[in-house]
Image 1 (cartoon, rainbow, N blue to C red):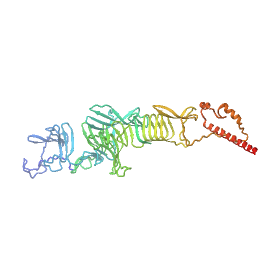
Image 2: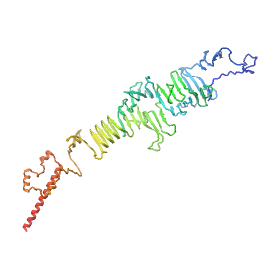
Image 3: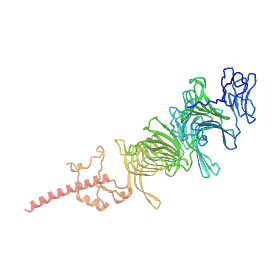
Image 4: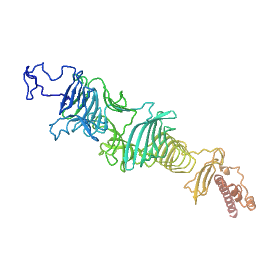
Amino acid sequence: MKKLIFILFFGVCFFEVHAQYWNLSGNSGVGIRYFLGTTDNSNLIFKTNGEERMRLLSDNSFLGIGLLEADPQAPLHLWYPFSVGKFTKLIQLSTNSLSQSNALNDGFSIAFSSTKDIRLKQHEQAKLFFEGPEGGLTIAPDGNIGVGTNLPQKKLHIEEGALLISKTIQSSSTDLLSINVSEPNKSRTWMLDYMTNNGNGGLHLRTNSYNNGILPFSISQLFLGSDGSIGVGKTDPQARLDVGGDIKAESAKITGNNLSNGFNISYNNTDILLKQREQGKLFLEGTGGGLTIASNGNIGMGTETPTEKLHVVNGNILISKNPTTTSSGSMIFKLNSANQTAWGVEYVNSTTDGYGLNFWNYKDNPDIPTDIYKKYSILFLSSQGSIGVGTTSPSAKLEVAGSLKAQSANIANTLTANQVKATNLSIANNFSINNLIAQNAKIADSISADYLTSKIAIIKGYFNVDHFVTTDWTYASSVFVDRDYTKAFVVCKRTAGVDKEVFVVHGNGVVSAKKIYADKMEIRTDALSCYWYDHVFYPDYQLRPLNELETFIKQNNHLPEIPSAKEIGENGLDLGDMQGKLLLKIEELTLYIIQQQKEIEELKKAIK
């Protein structure tokens, strides 16, 4: 680079000892006694056309140019009348030929305007550097700004350092980071701030929507509490994850005199460098503040003691984009390597990318080998207040395009999902799912599922499950009641909105059913309380004579030990007991047949 040095050459050539005037065509024989200047305490003034152009003070090395007979107040003090509405150049460093054709569009200039603005401008396709001894700020030709890097890839690119946004306790400003996008007749601003709520401080992400200049309300999107809790649409989360709305998921698992000191401005044919070479700070300021570059390369905005690569105090960082452009305005986090996974945060506004704040990951697709280094949405905060995990078009307050896993899930309204895995699951309303796997499941209303796997399932409403599997080795399903006639299990048929019980299991084991169809039915009795009816064939069994049997039948119209039709109508039929009594009668009938056969044999012998 060329140093910015203002040296005045007036063609000084000292003349002969006897000469008292300068020869405009040149002078010779000059010595150290001859000079251009004053020998008394008078300023040295240069004029053209009778008007003062430059003044060098007699008592110090202050040079003023264009000050109109005023004394300069600095070693170099410049003034030039400005043009209203335009920037007026005070200093121009040219790197090419000084012909009129390119003198205005090359090199570097410092200019000011009628509005008191200061502009430092690089006129060529090269970088502009602002540096402290250990680093600083780089402005690339495309307008990208790099902190800690000379090759910024985005509007703001911070390398090997963090972005710190802080605020003083006394500050009334709460927004730490704002991202704004403007559209015709409306605009939307995303804000990140720190807030306290009932003693639980945290990071709060919210959005404001303006329509025709009217601000309807501020929408809370996400609150990350200091206690580890997360609120979605709520700033006072009452659980680890508290969602103020629906949850949707496919599945869930819930300058000095040498080069080592001072300050210099230099140029290397392409780039401009403003550099502080000592262990001091470099300040770039406007009347209301500006930029501080510390000796370690950290940059402060609103603070003179930055502790990170970029440290902003009592102010916001605004990343905006033209609503008609498809380019992204992202904050990107990555390793300083070409082929590494990158993370970014950007505002998107299109039908393909969604409308909201997108937290994305730039990586390979493990499922499709040909998809190399593509952008995948990880978390999406829509402009409507919805949140998508793995999707940029959430159709519920929280939609997860994948699995959801939780140790405990408490859902106060409706849950619709492909799969849920949880240790403890409590649902206060309707529940519709393809596959439910839970250690304990409590459902206060109804459940509709393809598969239900649970050790304990308590369902107080309607139950519609295609496959029910228990993790308990003893029971496929268990229902506990504390009264004999409590209906432990009921099947109803709904006709015209009216439910009619068609199958009931009571607490005492009694089953009421309209009809029972079975390929095989087995009835077991307690061997200690029932000896069955083998005693009929014991030798001491007293078989009722046939004449007594006839008399009983005529009097009662049914066999002995068999209940009458009236008794069955009043008390019902004990299927097990009736099967035993029918066997009893068959055995007695067998004894009657044997007895008759003996009598027939004796009659045959007597006839012969």
